[in-house]
Image (cartoon, rainbow, N blue to C red):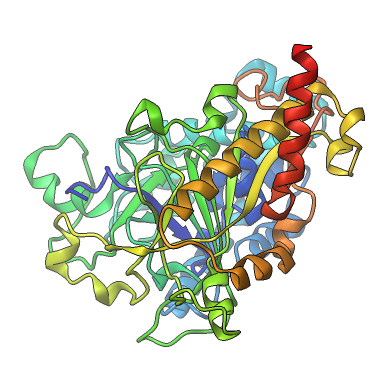
Length: 485
């Protein structure tokens, strides 16, 4: 980690209301290549709702219900006030205001015609892509850094006049609403039950280190103009990204055991599940390349850190403990280790947070693998016999099996799973939010905003559990032999 903190993963949790721009299912969809699984800022979500036919009270209810504030967050009261300020602006977002705005005149004519011809009732994917374009235009119409990056009380009156949609989303607010907030620390500060990891800003990701841009950088003319900022502002490793995070930026998903409120001394709950992209953004060596790279089939690994705790409680042994954070043992590799995180932001005093110090991994504690997610047709997901499956489904299943075998071998290079742990994993189902069918849009989008036609050809996320691996490997071997004979 270095300053500015653009070279490390970023984390967003559901403890704060505006951290709920992506559900668990949509995070998996993003890792499996769904081009419309965006992480939305509250303003982007509002435009999504408007373009899908909602307005007035229905729009307000939809957006408010999507961005819930957890009582587990230590600053829940302050966060709720910011949410109320945002909701107070929502009634200003109407179809008529959009049609009369400067922003509307800047939209592509094709998009204008589609919105009008459907009566503001775009399909979800089209509304998502169009909302992303709208946020791009909205932010581009401001002075650099204005509004979305400012931290202190400022003269926000100009925002309402200069914003091209005339809504004035950030008027009177020191907590901009058209921003995705992330932190470089995976502590429990912003984490109630779900946390998403995003790519580093300088490795295919996005975002600006807030403290660097508003104070340290500002005095050194780093090229990021800002309205205000002070040297003693409290810092929690915050980065800000205007508008949204792209689906390609999602690196991992973490789920905790419960949403139970936590005390100040323990700002996080132990992790139960973790989903990682099967391959990292950069490979340490050609030998480390995953089987998924050769076929270009997206695969996501399903890890179950809860097995370490549960099997210990039942006498399974294996040096078990609660896991609060997970890292790849090697960049781009398929071995994952527990970190020493979990104590909360107090574990990072100022002198640590502004230098090259990050949570240390625990080498003797690899995380158990439950299985993988991969793309497949609805028929394959419904249990279609192997012999009747399309060749594309067979190819994807075999790629998933190779990745899973590679991950198991990588984890067993360290402390191997005990018999009790393997039995517990076989008997443990996925959590409810991941067990239901996860719908996936085609990987290749259409135009910059309109989904490829016909839009009906969607796929789903299939799972391959460790308990099913041997059988699938045998089917893949037989299929390969048959194709050669």
